[in-house]
Image (cartoon, rainbow, N blue to C red; front, side, top):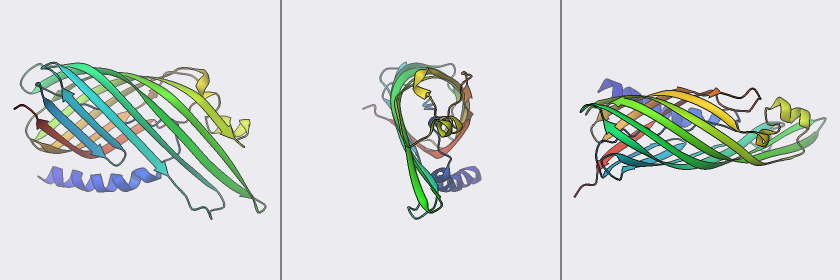
Length: 244
């Protein structure tokens, strides 16, 4: 299919472009939208920064597991640079039910743990100054979805509600004025809330498809936090049946 060929090209492109994103504390991961339909069904998805799995424990109860990792680097010979890395692991459980043979609804809730670290430097009058920042966080989420599935094409609409509780923030040689300017100041003094609607499209045939997910992340707090306000993810997904 032409659509599938085009999306495969985007998978390769996304593997390059995601390595050059800005340094954020909160980067929304792929919303895991398995659209399971029966017991012992398994779905796995992968792209440049995310690895996900789901399993239907019964005809209506599903389990999801998600992992995310991003890293940016720079040459140590650069006079100034911003580098960083971060990871997230989370799991959840939920309920799914086919409305018709092609239209499915589901809702999942869960929790996870993440950690982010930044290492930056700048050179002034030949003197280099390094400054670092790191923070951990607990994430809680609830995500309802409804979607259409077929052998060739799937599409789903989702809304993820996120509660993020940072803790253990630490900085080194990072002036308070710069922390405020970079939207990193006192992040661990409050609970952060986000609403994240998204659309997921999958194209291929039966067991293996290419997926594209586009969404936005809307902050519910007035305070500032370094984050990505939109997310675009492209990758591969496989669907398998473990029934004997």
